[in-house]
Image (cartoon, rainbow, N blue to C red; front, side):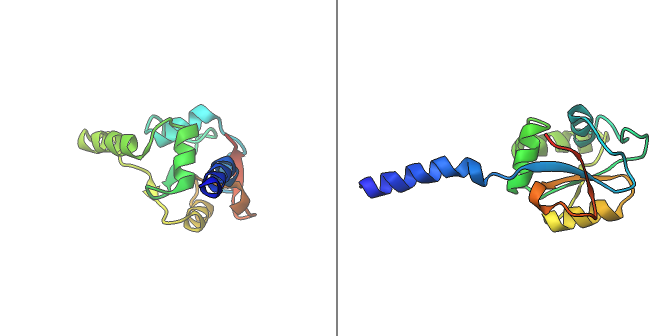
Length: 137
């Protein structure tokens, strides 16, 4: 029994270390920086432009993704159920459509890199020269 308690405690203590460090990425031709509030406004349909005036195209990871959960926890303060309800209302009232979904972090990076005004989020360890970090929450 003590052995199981030890492993349980060890797992709980190490779990924060396994959490991703999410960063906001942008297309290399886009702005060099963005604020927390500007990112939130883009992902909650309150704004459609990047700080440089360029039309923004936000991308979203699938529900259940750990990086998505961390992003929304830090930026929008909403979980998957709250986001689903929010976007259902936006679509129903004709106010907007949810961000385009990227199937994985690699797809997110590729879509942001190839889309003018593209913005997304990935784990900091996945950043390469195809995109640039424009904000770190």
